[in-house]
Image (cartoon, rainbow, N blue to C red; front, side, top):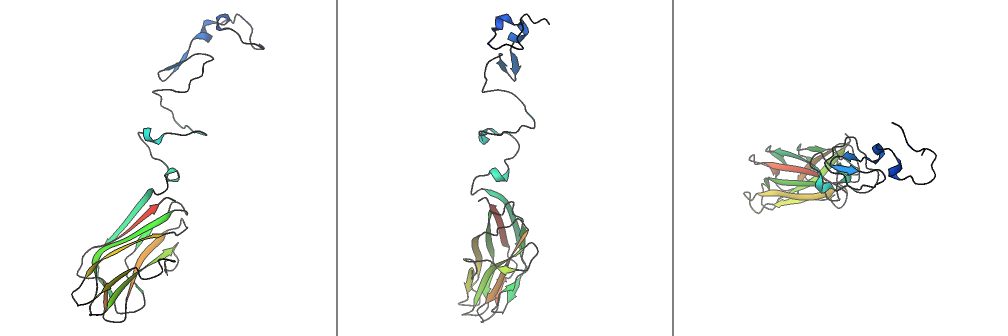
Length: 217
């Protein structure tokens, strides 16, 4: 193809009419035609692979496939949910908190996120009128020993008082933990009584549910 005019060292604009017709022919990306020298801000009907957006914003509402990384989720988003259930019986006559053996493991995606913990259901009571059953939440981080959650959850979270031996209630606990780790966390309810009678975390085989949700910070 002969080039009618020399332009490699041009210092001023060269009219398209002075260039070969191939230079004046637009190219098409998707269904958008782009002419030489023009600026295009919108391209339609294109499929791109391995694209990196280094600046600006991407409208997530128009995504039709794939996932949004957890680091880009807005504050308060639920990033993962882990749940465990049991219908095992557990009781203690101790006034010191003892492990129930009912555990749940969750591994946070980010150390800045929080973990919402819930205990629901079961058959929670004390066998003796005037007695109480107490629940507290303990955790193990990265395979370490169990310790009670820090303040304000380092106390009794759930109490069942027995005004008669047949009065039984369901667990209803919700708390927001800030473990500040990406290591595996094992949560486990502990229980105790007030020194009167026997306290049951569960009895007669109803289901108790332990749920952990990671919430983005």
